[in-house]
Length: 72
Image (cartoon, rainbow, N blue to C red; front, side, top):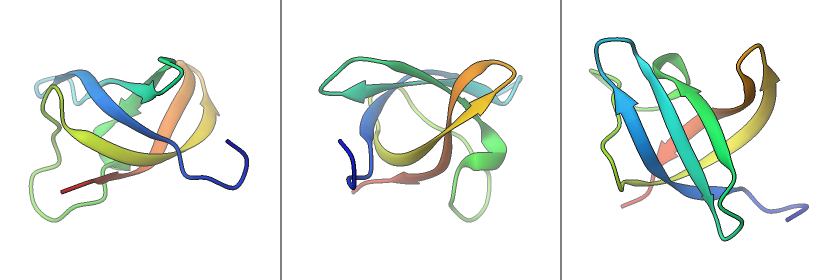
């Protein structure tokens, strides 16, 4: 996957706590995602099954998705 931006689907996201997980495709690895890493205007949330692109970084919670962008 070197040189490619990872893609995946939202596994779950808790609006009240502001975090959730994205499952990458095709390797099915889970990545923690915090609402502050969602790149969109307005209320930053994700819905189960939404397709996203993201970058990967280490975090205290494990591997995390950063710069998360919704795909349309």
